[in-house]
Length: 218
Image (cartoon, rainbow, N blue to C red):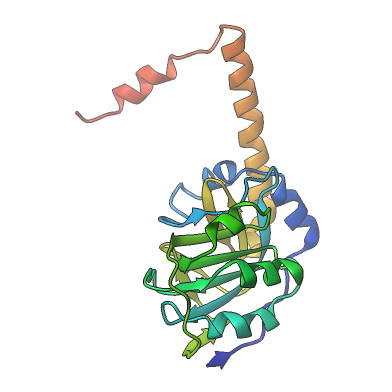
């Protein structure tokens, strides 16, 4: 098992600001092409967005030895992401190991593979994302890697990236981009608020639809 040190944590001021923003507003400023596909949230919906620094792991499908060791590399506020190859034959974690992650202050767990004990997880606030569910438990044989570049749900994640999650999915990006994305996302929300107000007042200008149709090639 390759074990690399965890990257420095992102600035807490930035993390706090990102928790207040929905993913969609940030995604609109990442060319609408960044984010996971096929991973689902299994926890109880929350008002705040999950946000934290990525601690990454890559493991054999259905094996959680790497997850168990990777918890030692997590600090309060980190998000632990496991690339288990999308395998759904055996669960990587369940209620107990996600409970422990929450207990030590991890901000959330992302598994590109299977989980179990979903009824238990759905009754908790702790963010858990996974590709699927099975009652079949994990192996504990390895191999695996900690704090390497991984892929979860088609999204590349590097150790130290900022990871966000809400009911729409997950995003990851380098901390250096956070301040700019926060400002742009706030601008998106302000524009959306103006649009909703215009709709409520019956003055929403729909002329932009003509321009959209005009540029089509069909």
